[in-house]
Image (tube, rainbow, N blue to C red; front, side):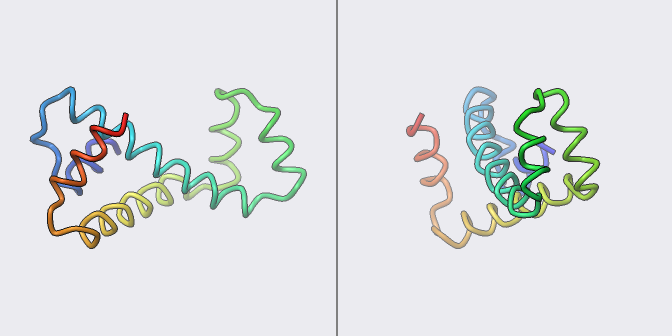
Length: 102
């Protein structure tokens, strides 16, 4: 999936160090958006249960509750790519902003 976001955003030719830095930041954005969607679709009891689970227990819980979790992530990756492409005609400048922000 991570290679997919790099290909969609045409970043696969970046040097490895920069590629990883951009990827980490973009995946954090994607996961925050997906988690926001998930939290809106959990009942209060499910939210409490999710909060009590360890990281290793959380993913299976979410995959059981949201069998299309991977598809949700792919959709958000696509949305993020569109946002970047629409936001600026200079996509390289957006990447440089991401790299310099952290």
